[in-house]
Image 1: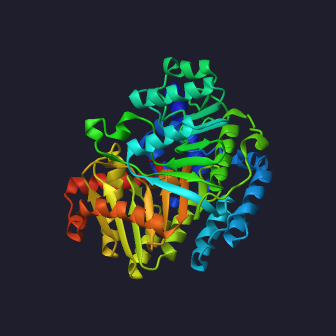
Image 2: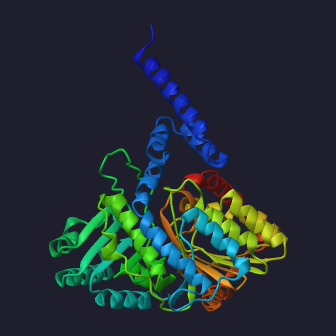
Length: 480
């Protein structure tokens, strides 16, 4: 007669087979499918639980309903954006060069956000300058301040900006703060109470402590976004905390790249915040109160790309693939984490085969060594194709930036890894501007000058234990 243990074993194997069947039916990338199947086989019970928690993408189903509520505003801003590129909007704008139109077009088709001219863009490469510009902008607010962050630390820097929001809220300025529930897990009620008491609306994105239908602890909001009065916005890779100023010895110096945008592109940033706020709170912001008429503030063409698991397409991966494929002379990329998917890997290798100079700079000081090992597993094949890879040991290079042909560039919150491509809500700005591209390129060049180039000999002849670590990390890279 079967024992209780035998019944339990039969039940487990039945559940494992059903789970693997579910993975096969979803038809994701083969590497991700294989990684999950191996996890289930190598980690009995725990593997099934992990897949139940992390294997599903429950956010995607709500995307269309949310976007319909903002479709009218999207059409209005998009029409103005298109006229700005033709040069017939108030203030005029330089037309987008024809050879860059395919890049803009794929971004528009996948994200529904067109490029817009007439923007003034400032680039910040030093944390204190970034924070000073943000503080100046918040202090100038007269109607509202909207902030969205992955990490907000309860340290001196975090307290300073918290108190600034408290001050503005008491002056009658509407302040909304949307924080990621995992990135800001250490913000307790004591830290938040002054904000709430002053009237600041504080919400957490996909909180992990609330068990509900869309509970997805692995899908995180990695965006860093500020909009002030609907006409000025900030985005990039800079979170709020002391470590980003290099005040923590083990994480010093720290390098980030951030943008301040004034002009019509700020309205797209406002739209992204309104969309995320609606998703997190089910509160729809009054479009008339928060979306002013677009006005010309400069001559930079900017395209805003929100990406994340609420889209069926791999928007960020597709745009990067298009960018690399269109490159004619040079590609420079700086990223703290490099775990490319198959498409980006092929595009980088093919660009190098075509004679395009491809340079990657990646830091060796990292808070995620597993991701560094996974990235190193790609070095040999990339270097063999002609890609130049540099490792930067002098601090934490947290910037997520790229330049193409010294003509246009990207500044992002997204890393060059599968998590940013598939699981995180990210925010990227494409600047179709040669002056801005030269500035971003100079930043990368300064890092390259102090970095060590990885040779083919080093890449192919790593010690056995490193090869095993890198191979294992690569195997599970779709889950990182």
